[in-house]
Length: 126
Image (tube, rainbow, N blue to C red):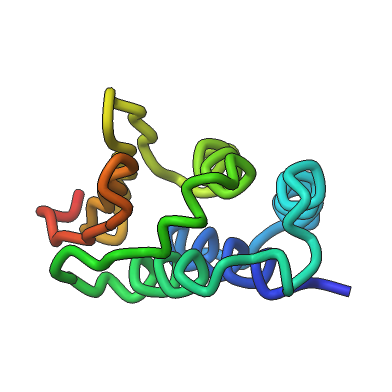
């Protein structure tokens, strides 16, 4: 059974690569989610699902806060760090932020870890 996080990541992978996810991609997504203890829907923060959906839709946002309690769960940030294994994107971990650039979707997503908020901005698509 595929959980909400797996579905969201697979959907993002398909949107950003413009092709259906292969069995290999689906297996890798399952491994990433399972290894980071986010295979149960109840363990997945709602903001993370919304974040991924907004990226997929290329939706530009203002800074959106996420609950401070989520900062104490490194599994969420580990999944984000591993997204580039299944989604065509560039991942950068800077001192206080994480930047995900998806040229195919024309978006850059920034998670400001220290202040507990994220923003998605439009960029020139490749």
